[in-house]
Length: 74
Image (cartoon, rainbow, N blue to C red; front, top):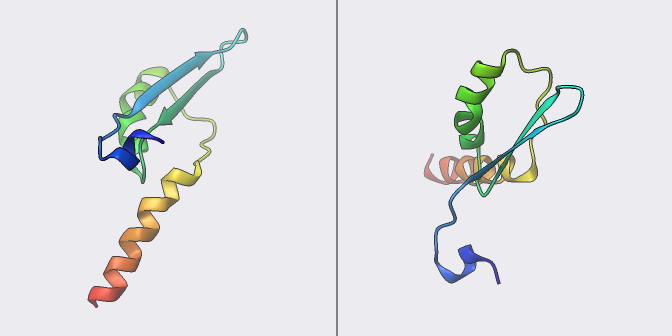
């Protein structure tokens, strides 16, 4: 059973991997929605330009829930 199912908030974790050729990969764990982009922005700015961004399923989960709420209210 994961921590969210037991009612305990899970803190986001940022994993930074530097490959032997100097490529840096940043992965956020435990964050839903676009908040992961906010968490990594300072690192991305410090490292230079972002060559690519791959969004995981969690990025879209919270956004979809928010859209459903908006549609019900309107």
